[in-house]
Length: 486
Image (cartoon, rainbow, N blue to C red; front, side):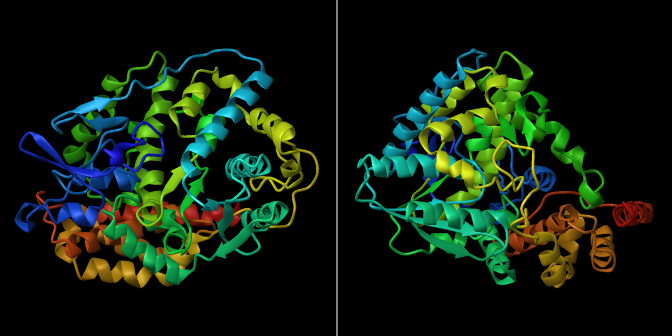
């Protein structure tokens, strides 16, 4: 099936499936899939809500609708669609190789991967930032142009963020350096409103802030495919959200009632499901060391269920390929000792294959890549301020969503805490705050999602207490005043 052509790539866009008897039926979109479920059978998977609320993504193959799943990681259906054929995932090893051997092997595998994605396309879009992952993709892409292997290709780079942010400034310089067309796509309140609708239409499996300007890129005309480099940090430098693989912990440690917004007894109804989601894949793909298992968890849960789910918004309109995600690429990097998967690999690669890219500072520091000396430039490090945007433009949307769905909201969330937290966000805004804002917005998303698709819930009455509200109020204000005097 062409739908499963890249099923063993980390960046694969998993379709939905429903088991009908002993066979699987597959669907490319959530909207198409949920139409196959009669309204009387549409029940909310509360465990999925807990997972997204706690971490930003569903675990395993779960969705917010019971009986509807994403296809498994590294799996394709067998010939009669009755069971799964799993890919033999490359082993984590701890090989020690010379850095220059690593660089050359890594680079050549990236060239092979990129060519396999774009060989049949003429006009190529690239999601370009001021970071190093997309810079590596840009280096490979321009070198293929210089070699005349893709000489006839047209390149269009897309960047979102504040106009004065490092991402925007640096990516514009990179595009200009290579003679590529460059487009700045803005994420404003109007775009975030569109993201709210898009997130609901895609199953409410992630929060709207992670869509950035993807819906705008998806509507671009004349683009044959889009390249992304988001897997670079995790594959090339063994880093997830700034944390090295050796410092990773179990995803079960991330499950929690942020801000007290979930019903107090949430674990009573979700703990077993969450544990099963994690343990199933540990059994399918065992690893020798805990850190290797945790790295695999990050790929199959976090990267697959949030990053890929968001990027699928583009892929539904324009084929989107994630670099660093082919089995040869991530398999090679997994074979190395983690001590060798560092910033030095990127620096050596660029020094050899596209050194001029090292003259442009790194968006993370405002300094040359992997250098600590000197002052950072004056451009903004953050390419967005979604916390302020939510407080300024979406508190009414959140409050109205609660009020208009009060009975339903009380079954899932602690609405008293939610309403008090909304007031505190406006009266005592925490500079740079986003965690509470993001969760409140997701609370509204869940309620509107259930209303749109006539989803029911099978949970007993929620008994919140006044003391829960007081504790949360004290906790939030404590964080506010601590930030003020810090």
